Image (cartoon, rainbow, N blue to C red; front, side):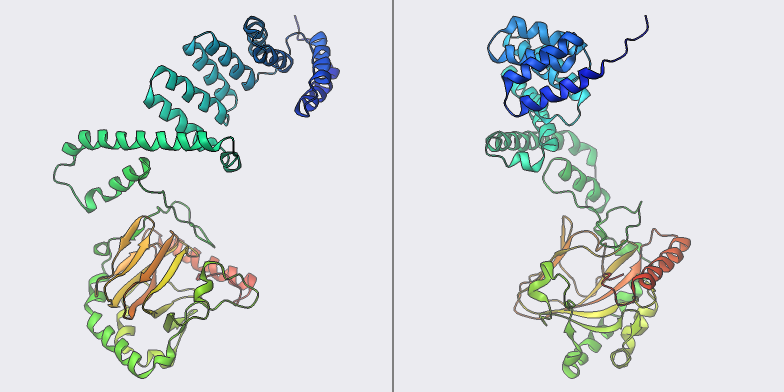
Length: 432
């Protein structure tokens, strides 16, 4: 028999009935839902409405009959399965209740309430691991605004506590089972795995590259790169004493060449750098700035420039190379921030490094060691601090990301130069 042609009145009546119900006018809503059932006896929304009302007044038999018809009717509603799950719970059939909640989640994957209800059932059954998994799913789906509502806060706090406790127990369980698999591997060999495990267990947050301007897709979010993987690094590090000697001459004879690193243009938002805006506490002595050599500074630093010639620096017309001595005065902190593009990496050559100074990228904190390069992706959240009573200075320059092909470097160069041509060379585009 061919399918019956839908009655256009049904959709209109159902929409109005639902609107009245949301406004709290149950009597008027019920009258319209009755009209819907008169026209479409297996209408899922109408049956769900009457089944929920029967459940609320304790008429379990009527609720079961209505809701069983509702889950077979049309349209298919997650809410019908959720209410039927409550019927099963009231009858002590927790297994059937979980099956209905799973159906509700299948129909509406974002139904966080169904996960909370599953957690309540697992608590009743004494299955703490399943309860924690259900809570974890609920928390991932719960909108922030809903999580902050007064009625949800106690439940959210309980869920967070149980998830954290379960992750701690899982961590201990995994540690015991995985220790033999480590063998003699430690340090760099398993550093990526160890961080992944910490993130998975909630011990550390997940940090990803977040370029402010241009994102090269497919590049991994790696905080610090091992300097041993860069063939030019040993030669650069071997120049440390000569570079430091030139820096000391600059500090002695040309201190005025250091300028505040943060210089926000009028009308631009300062954001997290407000305390450092035009503040010499974080200053720079530029050798290359916006792709242009600062000749009077370069003349003072021939050995530094010779070292940089052996480095695969980024070249972008009107923007790169960029190379400078970065000075951080005592008790100064650079707030967490993200760089402009991940087509390049940032390199620090530590020169004057007092104690209590460090750089954090993502989950990793590294102290500078004079003469040992730090190479990192500055599009991951990073921050730096000098908590000492002395000046800290590093030489900073950029290199192409080693995973870019020559063709990609060429296209990135052309793209970034074209972006500046489009907006203007002086446009606020960040450190491209």
